[in-house]
Image (cartoon, rainbow, N blue to C red; front, side):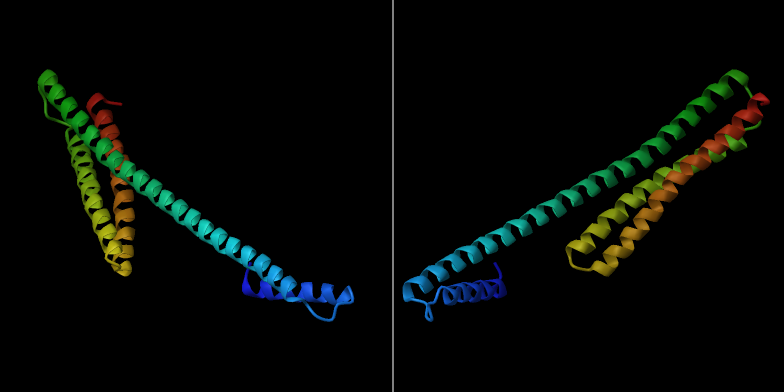
Length: 179
């Protein structure tokens, strides 16, 4: 119960007392009225504190979830680009050893370069994410926000390199096998 509510409650009780024909409130009734008001106001404070605590806990859990999903996204960009680069290298090694030719390699080499660049972007994004969190922790919110935005952009670029690398690989298979 807020202060205004407590005052309104006391006024309402005084009006009710007046309606019963009593012109004055006894000390005993006033004391009871103040006890009731105090009990409700202390309950209100406890309620406000518990709501505040619950909100803080919710915010913390949301932050943890965002952090975990962000880490998973960064690991994914590094993993898919790195895995694709290894697959292209394995294919090239096998293709060159069996076919004994190095023609039509430009698309595969481009794919390898793009996948490698995607891994690099993922690693740089991880470093920028660390810097953003560090700035936020030291109350340098403007810098933290700037690095956070940069991290998102670099993360999206890293994912985009995977798509571009797939396109180069597709072109390489088309030219190598006449598709």
